[in-house]
Amino acid sequence: MTAPVAVYSPSGAVGGVEQVARNAYGALASTDSGARLHLGARGIVASRRPTATWMALTWKTQSLVTASHPWLRGPCLLWLHGAELTRDDGLPHRHLRERALRTSDVLLAVSPIAERLLPRHARARMQLVGPPIEPADVSTWDGREHPNGDELRLLSVGRAVPRKGHDTAI
Image (cartoon, rainbow, N blue to C red; front, side, top):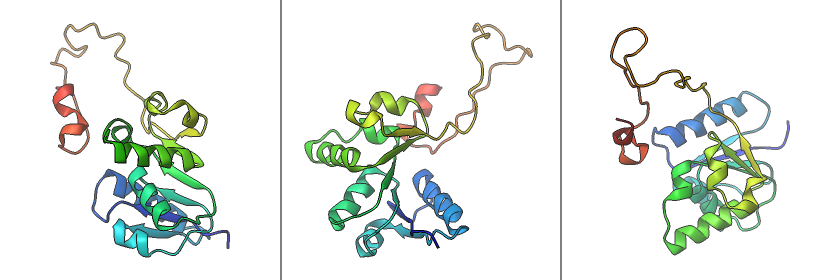
């Protein structure tokens, strides 16, 4: 068996970040990695100290893990979400976010936009792991009638919460 991998998720709820945690854990559990999934603040605080690779699904989770386990060993992967890099501008949150970005070994991002949002010192550690689908080529559409004669239709996928920006897309 290889060194164990700990996956930390902010909660057990079903949402985008939590689904990423479950998918990562599922993929790791099918190997001999000895993967463990820790959900929510209580699960994170009560978890054994990871001595090998571990993955935090948000900077807040990473901050909680490092605060709970100050003698962590092993590399940490931090999964970046765009809203986390632009929201929570209050001093305590900004300090925790900066610490999480500074202490993570690898920063995973789905969008290349994350690189522009990161501080310079963190950009070299970012690895792009997406986007999962190719964007549509809209460069040939000049705003007139849709090529097949219908009205243009827009599909926006995501939770119906303000930060997802569906209202802006519409």
